[in-house]
Image 1 (tube, rainbow, N blue to C red):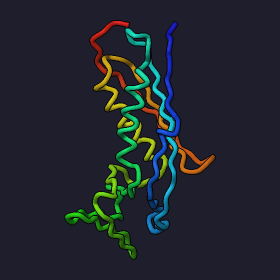
Image 2: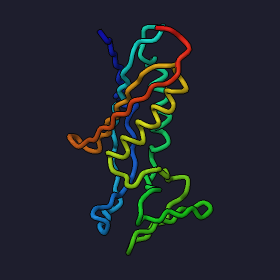
Image 3: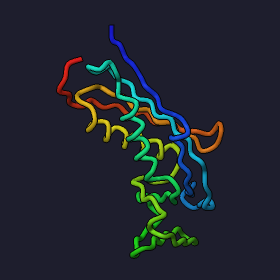
Length: 170
């Protein structure tokens, strides 16, 4: 028998407000607009020596750090093949065929994604949670699920799994 446990954080502290735009079919770029994105983060895995999957305070802290990087920022995709993002001192110039924006650098989040869809935002956050958890816990099989909701009833989920080294026995 294999036991698996999960913990979940999803409350007012896991909401971030950001502006973004996404592209469709290579030639359509929607208008810049904003959302109050709600996130839910679930971590699944075996129990550690303290009988926890991961300490809630540790998880809440690292999720808060990741969301703070996005909160009240313009989310810009760095991996898009038609959106050009150029840092020019304290400004960022963004170009898409027929469109141009200039933003203060301090108000932007440059993301390693191809488009700022909720699917790719969920993956970006799941990767961040996995990376930070691997440094905070020992060897453990963990699965991270991140759900990002952009409007009530409109959400996307990404699940990632990892096995990291551990120095303790459960």
